[in-house]
Image (cartoon, rainbow, N blue to C red; front, side, top):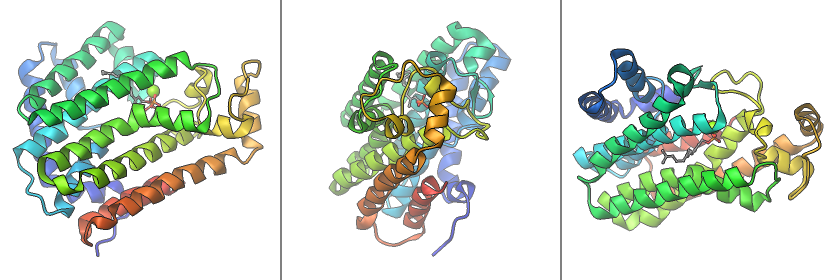
Length: 310
Ligand code: FPP
Ligand code: MG
């Protein structure tokens, strides 16, 4: 069985699919975008060069692991997932007033909020354009994911400065992050592997929650150069490390960011958060028992292990 030391080696397993998906995204973006040349190339780079494309990577790995022929429907599905994911990030960075995304200046800082809002909307229209070519069930999956994403964000807005319970935190992670992973793999199953719909949905849900917990852990690590650090805390968004340090439903509004950080550092909260992450990853690993052994399954397992590592 092949061994994978990094994400690029895993992505390389599906380079044929990524080439097709990137070409489709590039064509659609170039055909419909009326902006100036710098803006056009920035938007293309945003989607094609700087993104990890992990959601589409999972679609391709599962398709290959299950011996499914990767046709134009799967390429369109994967492209739509990536485009919607990037649309949500552009809007999310405006909401979070984030200065950096993937190591570079956020789109709204470079071009103003006005253009960034329309850019997210523009990407949504491109994704819709692809989804109308797929069976109606796929559109239903996406509409459900988008509703959950937006509801997750609205809940987060109204829960500011409140310490949620762990179960509320997981529910929020499910709607704002896992929902799109679920739609990606459920749609693949609905299109080509209907016997496995429920198991693939479960995998995506567990993996997606773990992915968000990892992102929240990284928000507390100072040497994270890709994205700003501590901005969740500063915005009054309390994630697992805060919940484990201060308790569910605790009131910490009187404490400064530094006081909160000191308490977290002197507690066992980061280890508890890592344990929570591992619980979801172990469930995801169990969910893929049904896939017979091959290099693609091995790559999916390695992706889970990479998320687990500190
Ligand atoms: C990142 O979370 C944000 C999301 C996963 C979802 C954002 C969703 C919206 C803004 C609403 C939907 C938008 C559209 C266009 C339909 P994070 O802030 O925890 O992660 P980060 O560290 O990557 O910023
Ligand atoms: Mg954000």
